[in-house]
Structures are given as structure tokens and as C-alpha cells.
Length: 86
Image (cartoon, helix red, strand yellow):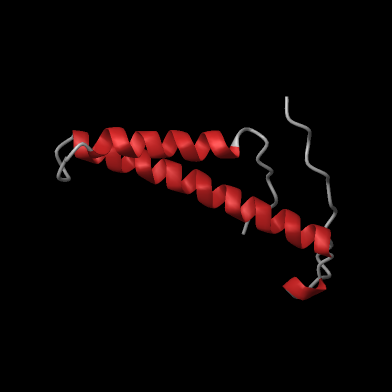
């Protein structure tokens, strides 16, 4: 089981990225990258399904897209953090 990421309280008083403490900026950036990876995996699955349904040209793409989605999820694992809503 992966260790829990550190919690950082972020005050609403910060008006810019530069005012955030470095640890908070790092945590927010990690969260954004992890969300991007999750979206990539979701889109790969959607494209694979569209190819299988005949909506897009299929040249062996669904299997490759599912492999890509699995790779993205596997390399990011379950230790993803949730850091607010951006």
C-alpha cells in the first residue's frame, strides 16, 4: 500500500501561484499532472470504443489505445492525490 501524500492546508488568502508555499505548488502541480494522465487514459479508452463501434478507422488502434491507457494508469498507480478543483 502506498504512503499517503502529505496534507497541505492552502488558505484562500493567496491571490497568485507565486504566493503559495513551494510544497503547496509541488502538490498542486503533481495533482494536475495526475489528473491529466487520468484524462489521457480515459480518452484512449473512448477512442478504442469508437474504433470498435466503427465510428473511426480501425488499423489495430483499439488494442494499442487500451495498452496505452493501461500503461498510463500503471505508471501513476493508486497513490494519486486529490487537490481541490482547478
